Length: 192
Image (tube, rainbow, N blue to C red):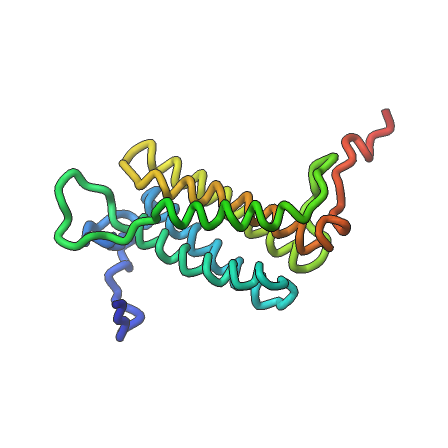
C-alpha cells in the first residue's frame, strides 16, 4: 500500500533522490531518467484516454496499461540485487507482456497490411497514440541504456517494446481501422 501524507520533503533539493531501496542517486542517473520517461508515457496515455476518441476495447486496454506502467516504474526504482531483498519488489512479468501481444493480434487482425510507413497523425486519438508510441520508444531506449550499467528485469524492456507496437496498431485502428492513415510518400517534395 502506498501512503502519501506529504508531497514535498525537501530531500531532493540537492539534486539527489531516493530509489525504492533507499539508495540515494543523482536525479540525472539513468535509472531516474528511465522511470521518469515511463511516467511521462503514462501521462500521455492519460491524455489519449481523456480526449475521449479512443474506442472500446482499446480505451479499457489503455487504462489497464496505465496500471502496468506504475508497476514498471516500481520495477525500475528498485535495483536488481544478488542478495534476496527484505521485501519482494514489484516486477513486470511475462503475463503482462503476453496480454499486450494478445491485444496487438486482436487489433491488427482488423487492419489491412501497410504499403508504406504511416505519418503520425490522422484523427486526434491516433495523433495522441502516435505521441505515446514515440515516448514509449524513448523509455525503452533509456531502460536499455540503464541495462548497459546495471542489471534490470529483462521483461521491462520487452514490455516497452510490445507496448510501442500496440500503440502503433491502436493508432491505425483509431484512424478508421487504417482508412484514415496518412501514408508516407518517399521524396514527395523533391523536384528530382
